[in-house]
Image 1 (cartoon, rainbow, N blue to C red):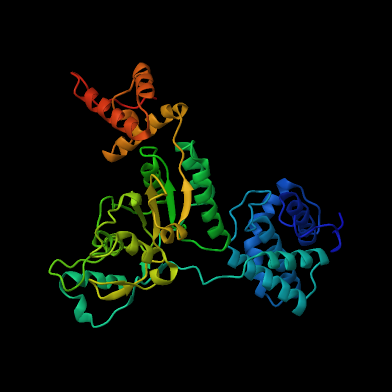
Image 2: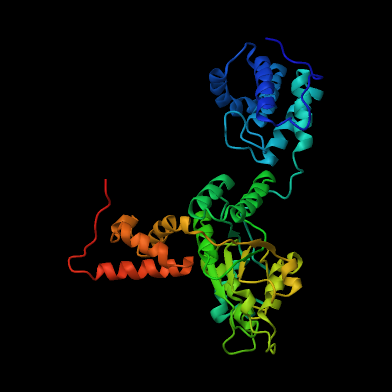
Length: 431
């Protein structure tokens, strides 16, 4: 089997197409193993790639040449835009760039690679993004601290934020998307927007869970708040729910300054300290219902703006600590029933996603999801340990509830009524 020449038709646009990758990998493997192979044999060779890549530093030209080809093949098989024909875990873009650069160095300084392999390595390298900062495992949240005496007493605990505060790593975008679509089948567009942001982070080598500041807009009771909670649970990030409905000053979000006897840091800073996670999820509910009539101490939306703005969030000044804190890694999701009462500066800083209401055909699945939530609340291992809801009771719930909030209340009341029945006891899950 011959190796295709560099001028063969492998265009930049379809370079990472699975079929093109399969053909290119086939050709490169022929050179590497000096024989033909089928897909089954190829799977056995994939396990050797990482070991062969260690030979990139080997002084023997033959070993280095084989390792350089292996590096190119491994990037194609595990490229950042897809999982390749064998659906392996993608390489981080930064690692892929390192491997390709070493392969090209070997071509120029040690021994030539086959033309097709060198050509593919160059074009893959051009397609990969330039590396950003080295992937971080955490960040110092307290970025500027003055006299240590100012963090005395109750504030002494916040000195911990001057050390490295870890990130929660992001789950794979596909897993996150599948889990949310299973529970919220009426909101695929919402889930796709969030998953695509995670995919972009994966492509660029970002490991921590981070999404753009987002505003979910939809009618009351359609599941926005529950969606945020499940997103946090699936992503394994701690969540803090703040309701600023009716709040007339910014102290609800900003905290109080050091001059007050009841001084306390921002609620966001408090939550970072209590969880020791630098990228929690802050859910700000009902931002359209803040009281704008009294602005003696500033509007909570004004404070929220400073936390969302990239420049100010990196060194946000906490008046209680009298120090700057880095809130740029915090995830913010706001909810609202309307856009009409929200100021334009706030809307400009948020990704606006309209959250649709579920239809009646989604209610049976919602009932099961609500039961799982109740079971989790009471630390039950299985929702089937709760009293069973009969088919006619399910039909009644579906027919008489108008939104998710009503359905959740009705399911809970029904379960409460069932546990009061004589002889009601915990039942075991069916086999």
